[in-house]
Amino acid sequence: MSIFGVAEIFISQIPDFQNLSGLSFIAAVMSFGYSSIGIALSIAKIAGSPLHLINTFYYLHNHE
Image 1 (cartoon, rainbow, N blue to C red):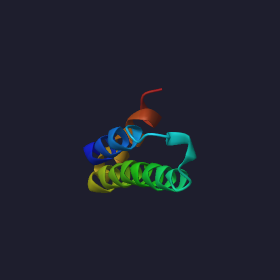
Image 2 (cartoon, rainbow, N blue to C red; image 1 turned 30 degrees about the horizontal axis):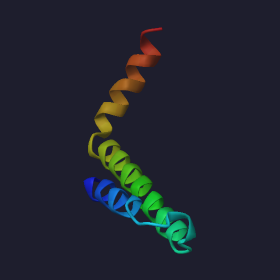
Image 3 (cartoon, rainbow, N blue to C red; image 1 turned 135 degrees about the vertical axis):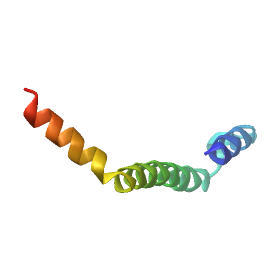
């Protein structure tokens, strides 16, 4: 994720920032990549510990 931060700092230093036509595409790709990493890590965490979800479900329904 730090790669995204470094890339954004580098891109922000480019002069005449508003006239770059490909910059919007690069920003969209970086945004999609960043959100994909977050989604993948969330899924991996949930898939890695399904017992935690079962225990949470049990607790919520039996301690009302």
